[in-house]
Every structure is written in structure tokens, then in C-alpha cells.
Amino acid sequence: MTDSLLARFRLDGKVAAITGGASGIGLATAAALREAGATVWLLDRDEAAAKREAAKLDGHALAMNVADEAEVDAGFARIADASGRLDILVNNAGTAIRRPSVELSRADWQTVVDVNMTGAFLCARAAARHMLAFGNGGAIVNTASIMGLSGGGLYPNISYQTTKGAIVNMTRALAVEWAKQGIRVNAVAPTWVRTGFIAPLLGQPDVVAEMERVTPMGRLADPEDVATAILFLASPAAGMVTGHTLAVDGGFLAQ
Image (cartoon, rainbow, N blue to C red; front, side, top):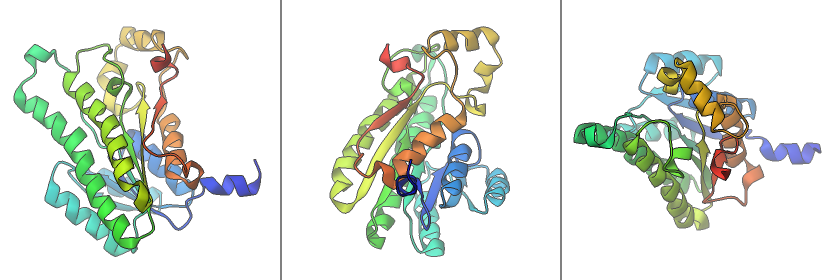
């Protein structure tokens, strides 16, 4: 690549907020965006972890429950006030409750909906309000899942699958709504990723072997595999890409 082409992946002077930023995909993404030149804000319910990891990246940390509307609005206002701009949102916070559908309580269903779907909307709305006010456009990247594009899986996980499917279409709808104002909205759809999020599964060798078997490339993803895809979608290199969900799945969805 020429230097000018590589420059399109740079984020110098940009300000990025990453929900669920203290661990896993979120932390790997924060590191990738920081390496590309962005100032990063790690937003996480675990404030201590967010502060610890943000210090390593010369970034900022903010405690945030993405399902709390007032907390989300106040948090993004704080970022905008402190940074004087907001260019990138990575909507990565998420949760899962794996149970057969007939055994899933309404309360557990609502917990997943509140974080994965409503929380993503609240953060996108709050971020977009500031992006529009600053007038510089922006990029939003949502974390969907292969389970949002496929009904398959190793375990019944109806609330997770439903909310991640909603993220795929929310991505399309917001992309169309905000395109004229210069805000691009895309998503990634990861396969199983070696993070604490699936720690109970990683502790079962037979389950890991099955995940590898159903993945054409024969392995699970690492957080960095997803982070670099997010970096692309957040960067000027993806300047003509919006409304797209990029699978990072080792070929799972191609089957």
C-alpha cells in the first residue's frame, strides 16, 4: 500500500467512544482505534476496569449502564463537553442468557433486550445528537453476531439471537436515516470469539471442538480479528460503506 492509501485508515484527531470497552472485543477495539490515532473513551459498567485499561491507552474511562437512558445521555454529553467533538461510536456492550425458550422468564428476556437492543439504540441516538451538533459527521459501528443472521447455534439463545437480529436491521435503518448528515452506520457480526463473554463455553473442550467443526476456517476468532474489522468500518477507508453488516466468522454464514 502507498502511504496515502494507508492514511485512509488513520483516525488522528478523532474521538471514539466504545461501550463494553473494558474487556474482550471492546478493549481490543479501543486499542486498535488508539493505535490508529484516535482519542478513546472506554465506557463500561465496571468502572475500575475501564479506568485501568484506559490508563494503558492514554485514554478516558466512564462508568455507564447502556440500558439507563439518563446515564447514557449524561455520559455522552460529558464526552462531548470534555473532548469538543465525537466522531466514532462502537456499540459493543452486550449480554446473553442461554436458556431454552420455554424456560426463559420475561425478566431474563427483558434484561437482554434492554442491554443489547435498547441500549444500542440509546447510545446511537445520544452519539448522533452530538455528531449532528458538531457538524462533522461520524461513524457508528454496532456489534451484531452470526446469531443475528442465522437461527442456528450450539445452545438455545432466543433473546440474544432476537436482539442481534434487531441490531442488523437497526443498522440499516439508522444508516438510511443519517446518511445525508454524514453519519455512517455499520455493524460487525462475529462468530464465537475467545473472550470472557463465552468463558463457560471455552471451559468445555467438546463444545470448543464443535464450534471449530462448524466453522469452515476451523478456529474461533480472536478479539483482534473483530477489532480490525471495526477499525476499517470506523475509518475513512470505509467512506462509501454504510448500512452494511460485515461478518467476521471464518465462513460460518457462507454455508
